[in-house]
View 1 (cartoon, rainbow, N blue to C red):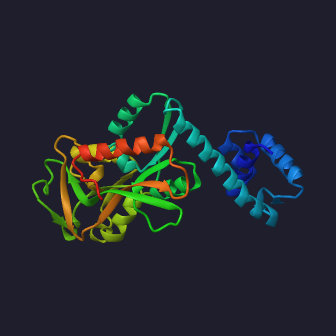
View 2: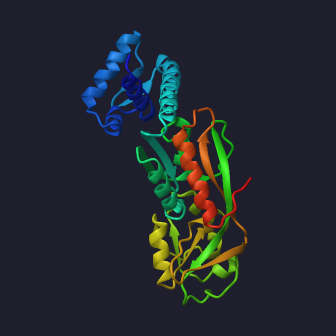
View 3: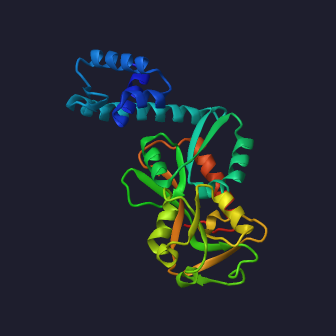
Length: 298
């Protein structure tokens, strides 16, 4: 039995589709099917029921999946422990980050980490908060940078700072000189907002969209592009203040009623080994936060 067979098995079990799993794993479908057959032969029992193009775990497959996931997790944690012994001369570090923090918090942390540990291959992945939480718990990511989420037994959140929702406008916008705004002040504004797949947009829709429903003119993924557009137009946008970029002329106005707050956090898998690389990168993130003037939470 080989580690790759366990990885192949778990990915097929997750997707319930051989073709999709082969694409995700970057192997041919025939190679994947062959490896699965070898694993079933070695175990002496079918692991999947094949129904057309879809496949489902058998009772034996469901039972084995728990042990396969645990075995891979233990081996990966062992590799991380050995990596920590080599003085961070080599290894890999996978970090998931929500879009709003990619530009605002990470550049300095990445530069500092890469300067100190050039032998570590750093992989930063921009993704929604829910996916970060899932991949941190599964071990696909070593560390996440998002915000506190609903209580999960497999996830540990280290709070960094709290941030408010703010209204962003350009220097010539009618509200540019306001010190604060309320929901009712948003009723006549033309808005640009982040796409609905993101948790921050979902919070905006939950608490504020009723004030300006029908006035959303642009929706996009890139918060950097959105802020550049707002700084040069009469559009407004709403973001959490930790994502605000220091663009010339951009005004960030606190929204005081209703007041919406979230807490930025480093996300760790509760029962997995924390590599020295992930600890060092987390340290650089904390420094970056402090240098931006956001007090670290205790």
